[in-house]
Amino acid sequence: MNHKKHSLIHKFLFFIERAGNHLPHPAFLFFFLTLILILTSFFTELMDLSVTHPISGGILRPVNLLSSKGLRIIIEDMVKNFSGFTPLGTVIVSLLGFSFAEKSGLIPTLVKALVLKSPKNLLIPMIFTAAIMSHMAGEVGYLLIPLGAMAFHKRGLHPLGGIAASFAGVAGGFSANFLISTVDTLTSGISQEAARIIHKSYIVTPVSNWYFMFFSSFLVIGLGSLITQKVILPYLGDYEGEVPQEEMSTLTPEEFRALKRSGGVFLGFIFFLILGLLPESGYLRDPENPGILNSSLIKGTPAMIFFLGSITGMTFGFSMGTFKTKKDLIKTMEEAMITLTPYMVMAFFASQFIALFNHSNLGFILALKGSSVLKTLNLGPIPLMLGLILLSVFLDLFIGSASAKWMIMAPIFVPMFMLLGISPELTQTSYRIADSVGNILTPLMPYFPLILSFAHKYDPKLGTGSLIALMVPYSLGFLIFWTIMLFFWMTMGWPLGPGAALFYGGM
Image 1: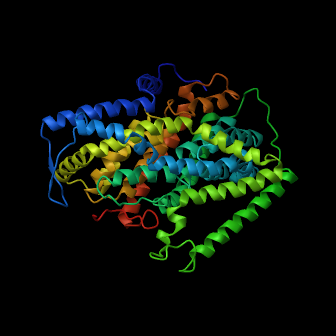
Image 2 (image 1 turned 180 degrees about the vertical axis):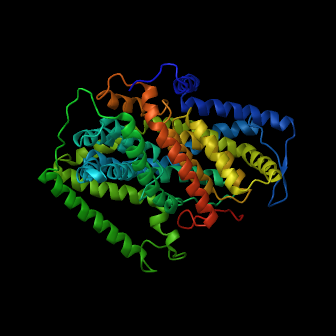
Image 3 (image 1 turned 30 degrees about the vertical axis):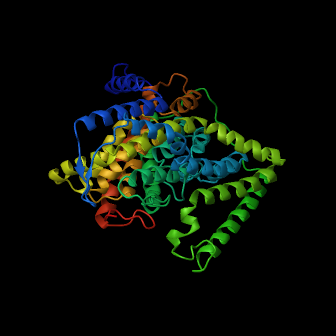
């Protein structure tokens, strides 16, 4: 792919990359934000900044974190802030379960089967479907990308088109899914922490966006397939590289047998859930509050993900021989914890920032002040969500971590919009749309160099700008039509998920 060296897109990307490289690691970012927070609490107290609590009518002032009381809070609560950080436990438990499904080979085999079984005219939609389903296992979907290139190449299509389509489905459609994924548990935990700045007992469940994200999957599959077929492949033309077409191996009898056994275990688990949920006295329901929304399935979604990933993964692993002894299971969990180390480091600093932000009362004060300004502007929910989406996309160009951005933004925007009558679930949905469409445009995205290396197999001279040029149509298309879908959803007044309303009615 040849592009003019001084094209506008290259100049813009160079500016973004240069600006983004000046940002510190997310852990340092939260550390610096904490220092700024401490100093801000000191100066706002000097300014005698205060607001009237909308419920109690009392006067609310900032807590000076440089005072003796503030220093005691910082020192004494440090361990509690980290150990009690909701997203941390949620992510660890979920990913431990998924580690069995991934390391055993179950998820890669399922993705492989999904792509291999698709006819040529359904290849592109099936790749997007596989990419979306891979979100159940967090970031394992990035392993699908070279498989997508192989599938395209085998069927006479440009392999870079397969990389673009797979990347768009995995990263650009990251929030869309037919089932609950790790991103649901991660974002809901952060949103819940932020919502409790206003409402101390507010609960944001992992299924709070499920209805919307379920139907979003059809949008990503349909629109992504159309862009690939009508824009990307004609732009790429015929492949003239040196890599010969590769034959993809079909499923072996051993893989097929292991899949059947894992499928049987999966159906047994579903039957277990149905028996525990359908009767009003089911063992997964709370006797004092027997509604399904209060059941262990909803409240314990991370545990359910752990059990499902564990039992299906172990069944597949022992059937295939990837797991041979109990030591292999322990090793799998240990390796999963190693991969979580960078997140845990970031979570330590993020937990301190969020906890101190809550202690300082600045979140509540900022939310009240901001909501007062927004009320005077008379903006409706749709303009507010559009503003949040555009801001999130802009920040996505500089901060590649979805959780890092939401940890920064949620304590500000969730309570602010709650005071304007917008539910945390709707604010979270708007953010997830923006984060997904921005993923595929920024070289600062952690997996971007990996995707570029996949592409170099077929075009060693492919540059960063060339890869991003392939992704721009997907990003713009998803941004426009996904946002329109959200606004239509809001206009119709449909819930975003089980028990997740669009608007917040108070405490």
